Structures are given as C-alpha cells and as structure tokens.
Length: 121
Image 1 (tube, rainbow, N blue to C red):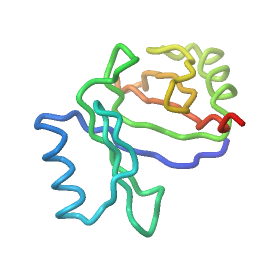
Image 2: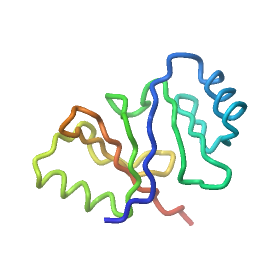
Image 3: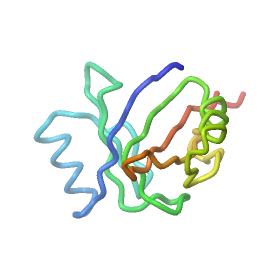
C-alpha cells in the first residue's frame, strides 16, 4: 500500500486566524488549503510535512484525528470492510477533490483515509 502523507488534524479551540498567525508567523509554514472550516499548513521545503486545524468537519459526523493519504483509497476501504473495522464515515467523493472515508482505530482515534481525485478535464 502506498502512503503519500500523514497529517495530524488538530481541533480548533481559537479562531482559525490565530492558528494561521501561529503556524505561518512563528513556525514559517505556508498555507496549503483553507476551506473556511479547515486550514492546512505545510513546510516550504517538504510539502508532505503538514498540519491541519479544523473547527468541525463540514461533511462528516465527527472530527478526524489524523488524515492518511493513500494511493488507492478504494482498496483500503475494501480492506477495512473485510477486516470488520468500524467505518465512521462512508467512502465519499468530496467537492474539494478528494475521495475519503473515516475508520476508527483500536484506540478510538478516527482516521481520515483519502486520495486526491484526478482533476476533471
């Protein structure tokens, strides 16, 4: 299985603008994504080194603790189902260009497993 990146998803306890000031100003990260309810920051020299801060997930019932980008999300989904893992959010094509599902790990953490969809032409 190809793992492309792993990103912690921090629950916002302050306005997202304060997170932006902290991660950009103090740590020197750059804004990679801002959907209004989630912001993602990345290293300027290693784009897979990322951290996300979110208020609440806009399309899922729970806040994911970690995001894991994989090469084939459908294959991982089938594997999770076959293993009897708890699927917290079904396999979904999101409007921001990812296909994802949430699965609960044995510790109770919610893992957002995703892949970017190819851009439409």
